Length: 108
Length: 251
Picture 1: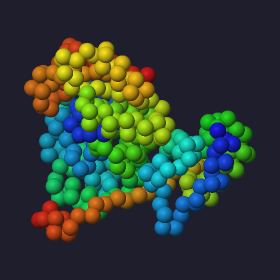
Picture 2: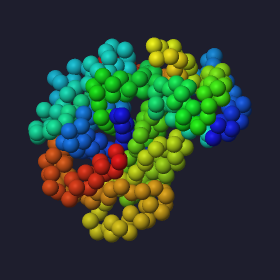
Picture 3: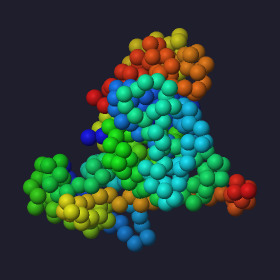
Picture 4: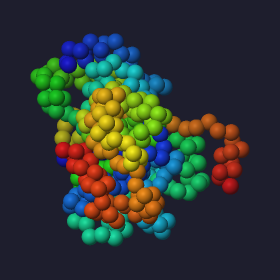
């Protein structure tokens, strides 16, 4: 899985600027990245050690991959008392386009 | 470690909320601490099954999503509402039933990522064993998020041609997102149907286990969401089916 992840990551366009990572965009990722990112989401926060066990890799290779994931904007780092942790920055706001008069009627 | 179970269906009216409420009650009867989140912000309803009146709903999921309160503030201990002696506890996080607040959440949207943070906070702060997510039918961002972070997913469908097509979409997406455990639940099955034949047919179509076949029942219809079936009819065959489903989802 590790080799496939690296291959797929190299082809992913970085997320950043005005482009947000949202759950729907997960579906368009290549299969290994998609499964890996959703695994991290289920853990909520992961450390390199957890990821290394999951991928059956040593920590150095895993750290290289986590750095690549951060560069691509697919995970973000968080420093805590427990050390460096990673999470998936799913941040998206969704709304509906409805004529203003309908919203106004609902507000009244 | 707590388990997150999402209950979803592609179409409405399949019995998601009833299934969610029954699962939560079964786990609580077994002594577990259970949270139930109504993420169906567009058409909330599960609070009715828990006999929750408006006076109990000081805050809602909407308030949390707008930053007006913490998710814990929105959690209501509805264990006493079950009107049965249960060993565990049930907390419900309802969605607002006020028209203006439903409209506001549709108009302004919200940070879907907050849902994930909220789920995790509920689990840790309330020391939950199980978190049941009652989703909105069809697919939208919050549904996808719920599916993505779930340890187990129950997909509810009826033996209806429209449900057959829609369910295949949900199954495909759940597979893409690598949900560890996924079961189909076929609800409202006419008594005339051969259950074994139906189970085999559906399992072959989706290549996914059918964990429960729930026949159409006059008792369910007559109860009309005025209570939770497995608590009102603990010895009914349908209650036994729900209990088997509950066990499989956390196996």
